[in-house]
Image 1 (cartoon, rainbow, N blue to C red):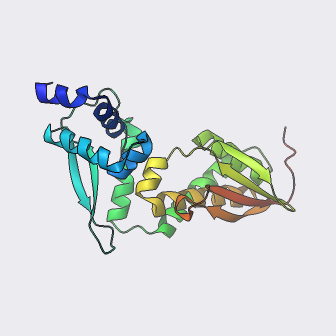
Image 2: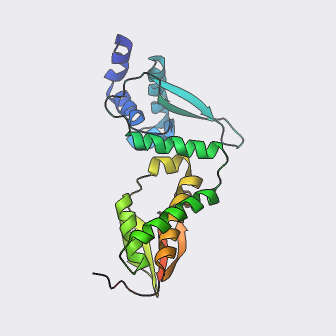
Image 3: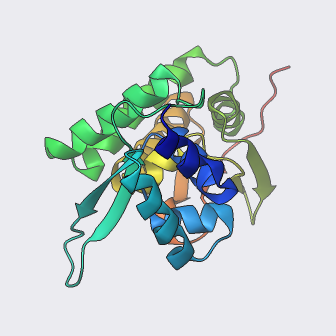
Length: 221
């Protein structure tokens, strides 16, 4: 590690920003880093420029299809030290597959269909006769930390307290969130006795959740 790199990472704020970039699977904007670290975006941009000058980060301009300046997103430069924070291989693979799906023109319903097939297989493995219980079990195994809240009648709302795909969902919301929606629908459809009434995703700008109507309670021990 040369002197310029050591100087760049010697600053506590720059080190924190670099650590965030080292541990993520997708490029981050200055605002993303500002939100994560509780800093002002302009302060973040100054530090990012210092990291770029030291050869530690790369920047790409992303055109979002709207009028105005492109958004700059930052990632570690090739060969930059990972500081032992590199994402696991399966997380990197998931990010690459999401990027590939977007590039070849996959649409939200393609993602939903894929998720549905995944959910059907999960539903086949469950021992529960309750689609609600089966869905909660699958969501727990995947790391969503589901929290159920009975609503009116036979409907139950399940909030996702954690999203294991958060970074991917922020980068590819239409694909990742619809994959998740399809999974929920697949489990419920396969087990039977209910249906998905509502699915609120990341891009709906409200807490992510699913509402399921179930016809009868689970009697499985």
